[in-house]
Length: 474
Ligand code: ATP
Ligand code: MN
Image 1 (cartoon, rainbow, N blue to C red):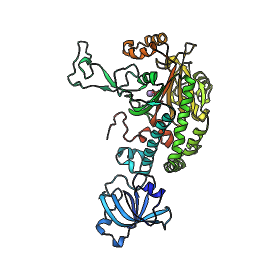
Image 2: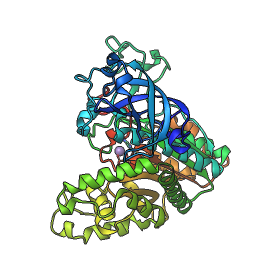
Image 3: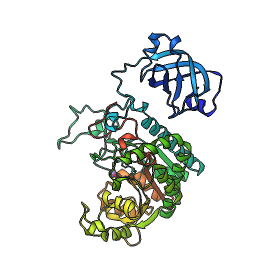
Image 4: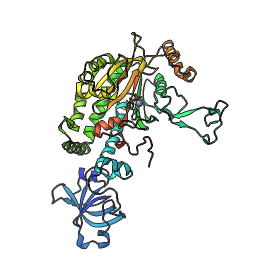
């Protein structure tokens, strides 16, 4: 039985058999066992007088063991049931002196270096169970709302998006690649006969699929070779990208808000034990911080707050005005002062809006076209596009989306203006030639949502094996 099932429906007085890893072994008598199915440990009472000394000496933190015994109501505090061990088998020994995960508090940095074992800690097993629950809720939401799950390519032949921050895919021998006279590499000799990269977004292909399936979404790995060593960026992350025919920007915002609330609500209900643990973890962490740095709400209160309250919606221009007249701007506290209308909002600005000014998630829409991508639909003012970003407290941007430009002539003009190779996008332009329709979509970074759901502050701690600049261990 898994420990989770056992607590749910305790087969009292029955002979049972469990397997797991030893968390602690106290007084030669009490084993705290965990099998990953739940954050709760099962207490196993060892009959030390009748247990072989050779076995007792191998019940060490980190060892894997199998226990046969009888489940009884617990006499001690702290657990409802416990198992009285009749037989213990050591499955895999663990040397107590060299096992890195000692039964004490480790720093997150230390655990990152031991990412292969950190899943045995309460914090990380909780995070990864929550990650799994979120992923399931995402599929469930789309299934219930009539979306088709599509898989867009991971190796992409189009570099229209994100040029410069892509990982090259090649089978050329890079030590003696075919070089042309002008010094560039001859990709016609490469595997695909052209330059290819790992995808930075499945959007363009998802738009393609939506133009026949109506409502689609992708959910897959995404790669960005951006050299930004922040606590919000990974070189490999997972992105959810819905794309909907016949949706305008307002429909798009409504969907994104409803979707995020649904997923968070699901997790609050599905992951009670894990969230309780992380909630207390953060309360304890806050106790060691100066007052002004402490959270006003606990993790669970923050999740419920987001689920139960409308997101603020403001235009870029409104956001710009608020920021321009804000205290930190007037007191020159921003690293990037708010100057002309049209500037890109920096993370410090976004955080001011969500954390200080509104104190709730904010959707900013109708951005200046100059700071947004070529495919976003131009507004009638000729200066702004139907883009929307959703900003979350403690995180910043969690969603980036837009209504897409469906008018062939306008799209072509934008492509030309930005010096993008039109030939590359022939298939994307075809969508505007044959039965074009109003449509919209967005991208949500899975790890950023998990950051919010778990209260963790570094994105490296919510993906099992993070890839970041100079780091691809494991
Ligand atoms: P940012 O400004 O934070 O770099 P972006 O504008 O590059 O984000 P988009 O291209 O709109 O982001 O991607 C959609 C979503 O994907 C973002 O809102 C974010 O949640 C997520 N995302 C983007 N880049 C990363 C990354 N390097 N690591 C993790 N998640 C990311
Ligand atoms: Mn980015």
